[in-house]
Every structure is written in C-alpha cells, then in structure tokens.
Image (cartoon, rainbow, N blue to C red; front, side):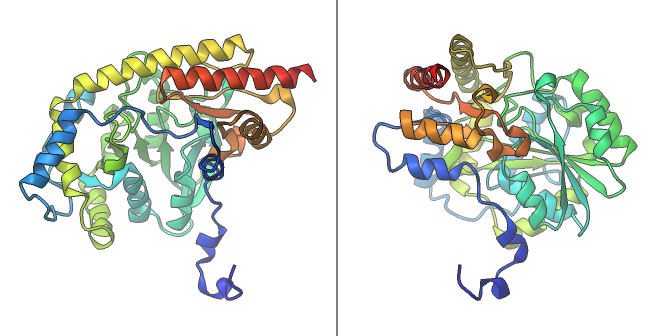
Length: 392
C-alpha cells in the first residue's frame, strides 16, 4: 500500500476485509480442468422471450434514462407480483423503486436509515454484503449466530439476547445464502412480535424467495404491523437467470423509499433501461420459466444431498436457494484449509463457510446452480478427496 494511504483513504473502507469468495476464483481462472461449485449464478440462459424484449427495446431506440424510481410499467408489475405472491399491497408510485440489483437496495436502506452508532442485527452465516454495507453507513454490526441444530433458522430467543437500545435494523436473509435454510410462517411469527416490541425495522432480502422447495416463501412483511416497518428487497438475478442484467427492487414505506431514491438519484440516476423493459416481460410472462428452473434445481438439490450422504459428509437439508452447507469438522482442519487443499489436489472450487461469517467455520458452501454433469464430476472428486483424508 502507498505510504500515504493512511492519511488519504477512508479508515472504514481500509478496514473492510475483501470478500472471502474471490480468492478461490482468482485461482480457478488460472487453472485448467478446474470445476467450480462456488458461484451463486444460475447456469440457465435468460429465457428467450425475456431477452427478446430487451433486444426489442434497443431496436425501438429505448436508450433513454427512465425516471429515478424506474419505469412505471415495471413498478406496476412489481406491485402485481407482491399482491399475488404475498397478498401485500404497495403503491407503485411511492412505495416501490427499481435498483441496480438487490445489492444496491441493501446499501441504500442502510444509508437512508443509519445514524452513527446505530446497530444492525445480522444473522450469520449470510450473504457477504450486509456487514460491510452496514459499516460503510456508520452502523455497528451485531452478529446473531444461526445454529446447525436449528437448521440455521433464526430463533427469537437468540435474537432477543442481542437486542439493545441502539438496535435499529434486523437483516432477515431468507431463503439463506449460504445455508439454504428457510423461515416458515411459524418461525417468523415470534420474530415479527419482537420487531414490534423493540421498534426494529427489517431488511428482508427475498432474492431467493421463488426458489423454495417445500411450500411457498413467506415474507415477514405479510404479518400484521410489519409492512410499515419492512423494506422487502428482491430482484431478477436468481429466479429469472438475469444476473448480468443487474436489476432489483425495493418495496416499503414511502417515507423510507423516498430517502433511498434520493441517494439513488445522485449516485446512480436510474437502473439500466434495457433491463427494465426485459423485467416487465419476466414478471408478466415468466412464471413458467421460474417453475421449470425451480424443478431443475430441486432435482440437483436431491442429487447433491444423496451424494454427500453417500460419502459420509453431514449436511442438513436445504429447503431454499441453490446451496448446500456440508459439515467438514471431522477432518480437524479449517474450512479455508479444506477448500484450499480440495482446489489444489482435486481442482474443485467450493467456498469456505467462513467467507459468510466466523460461525461458518467447519462448513463449506456448495452451489448446485450447475449442470448435473458438472455436479457429478465435482462430487466424485470431492468423494475421492475425503476418502483420502480418512485413510490417513
């Protein structure tokens, strides 16, 4: 680092740890015959009718800025989706806006609501962005550890122990990345009661909501008294295989959304216009695509669980997203050591659990957003690796 860096750079930024995911994929990119099960990205192409709508928007010369909050047609479709999927009513004009991926919405909620010293409650293991985004907004992240014996669900008693008079926002990251855990209506009810009791606001990240394999995803915003204290974050990357289109949305109280839009208009202006037109088509006519992809992921999920059981790696059954979170504690090495050796010796990239929080130690995140053929090859190599470790 430049010798003047300490005087020039932000202390908060310098203090952030780089993503624990990236180093493995920097190595993978330089390896031949390596198989990656690490990236949380669908291996499906964006459905053709959605791509076609994006192409058509370009042919029609729709290359202008949209309003800061997004295309009216798209916001109306988001409102319709929230009504049919969760029975939630949002005013498309004041309570919904379109973001550059769900990640921007997460960042904007923190920046719109946090004052220095406020605490953000973050259940972990979880997606890597919550902690750094909270810190960059001036918050103090407070970790609530999710436990394997509870299938990595958030329990009210564990949450309440972490609540203080400085607690302002609860992150609710379900269906969960990296564990694949979900929260049922019964799980969410006591959490909602705690939020009301302690005047907590909720960032409900529902990007994997459509990838739920038992029953339907339930939003905490659907509980009495919760819609007015919840920002629902969602997007198109996972359910519609639209990662590169960079499009998400936020739904919530107009007095919070208006402040998020204010930051968005100065920093971003608007989400990509072409992507927004494609997303209108996705929400109007994409339900069958989502069903097909969900069924395919479910097939892969069952195959991965069968394979892990066959090789003797304990793994609770993930019921959402497209990740498994097997336990490797028996081998007496850290998650990072295990993942590094697996990559070096068998050319398979899997993310160490600690990339998603310290309580991920002893676990690995394995993505099954890959073809069955790739999963078979990678899991055969993993089985060969663990068999070799046990033989020593």
